[in-house]
Image (cartoon, rainbow, N blue to C red):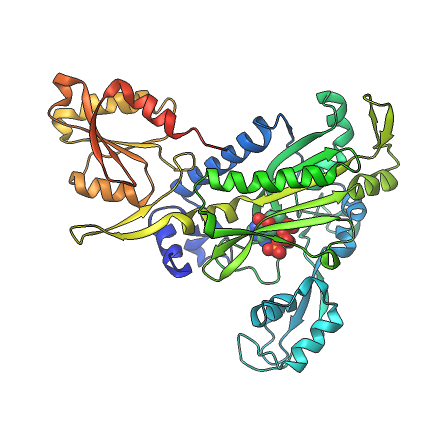
Length: 457
Ligand code: ATP
């Protein structure tokens, strides 16, 4: 597996991910997604939507990033969405105390520790500041991670609003509208993909933890007491989804949160943790959130958010199961999972990104062997295929070099137009993973690409 440093370099040099605001010296922990990164992100979102929205017959929502501040009061974010902040009294570097402890002892369940427990741990274990090496931490304070901003021209507290720290609340506050207008019957889910913002104390590990990121969230509404069934259903589906995208079985596992560490609103929570170079870490969370959110919004807004079940005429506040995944975390996992520097039988090496064709930025590459001889024909087919897929057209350099470039960015098929093409209407297709080449009819290309995009889930 690539190291984090190798991956950062790879991502930059091939146009996946650049440092944000680079020409101005950068802005810490912000990233811009280049031509390939933007394609990959879009493909990740499409794959998730296909699996969690289309195939499940759920519905979609696109709610605002800016919401009435009462939303965050009801959800508990105003008072509870905070992390334990500690400051090194020697160098004034700030840290998340739970993460400092976790790094020293992975067996400790930090979710069960109070601020006082953490203070004691830092002191008794003489935990050293990662920056200056001193053991001199200040008492832990609660740090609210919501980004504040002001609506309108006057920057005063009455106009203060927040950038959403999750997309979920937009779904809860629209539950009544959605249930009425979509005419969906419970159980059903609402999917939303969009930006979230958290003023993280310690962003880091490249795009793993940033202050601006995208989430793919599903809020699945079900009848009370059926939530365990749906929790297990979606927990299972999350694993199948990752496997269908070629994430290796050994590269992820499920961590079930122990009962005593669950949030007050949850009766079950699990994380899928991925084997990142710094250890297994959270990729995707699923929580059974009971009726906490809808109840809280009903109480504060005064709106009746209960549901009348026409099957048995019962009236209830639905329970919710929520799988929540960061686009960038899956992108990072996909790169670590698939990147390899391979030594070939002739002792040559190649960088290859083994990535599912579904996610691959380009589905196919078209190479005319000789620009003058086959260029016109190849570009005609390029135009035809690009009506359906993102296609890479490359007519410069030796074919070997073009193969290498395509392998490194994960193009599943390279198609070469050569001297035989004109008379036989055939091309050479080369498969990225096996490097096997075969002659096929131009007319069969569409079918070959299409077949590769069908996932087994
Ligand atoms: P963590 O413990 O890593 O901070 P969390 O448990 O707070 O994450 P959730 O609130 O459950 O995360 O968010 C759901 C998902 O959103 C996470 O599993 C992750 O994929 C993504 N996510 C959360 N915070 C960030 C972040 N700061 N940067 C990138 N992705 C994030």
